[in-house]
Length: 177
Image (tube, rainbow, N blue to C red; front, top):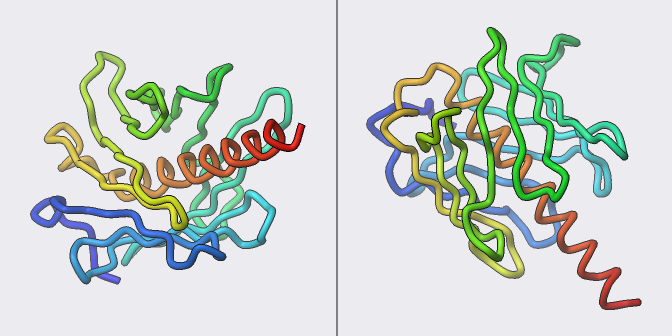
């Protein structure tokens, strides 16, 4: 795994390693910049890694779900995400009080963006793939020098992986009914 640097932020892709595994890598060409791996087949605990950092992510709650992000091995949250009512938007709360907005920017939910409070885009995701989940990632100029960019890239991908899983489960229930 190589370190995420501002000069290599073009052509990024999140790729699922196997259609049968909930493990993903953020790639720039042949180089791996980050990974997100769910620890159990049906659980929500995941571990995210970059060259120099690692976090755990977990969704908790049923009626009022929330995602927590912690430095691996710590009990202290470094960020948390609260989804909106319909699951197509939510807010990431960071230390120091900064709030970022994550929302679907397309009707079918294939495009997502992480934005500042004033609407300035930081990261954009264009979902790809049917059997294996992945996405093209655009890092906007406002995000390129952020020290928390590795955390934001991995946390957003974790949230999108959960959203895709939940959407697939909902579709299966509707089809069976």
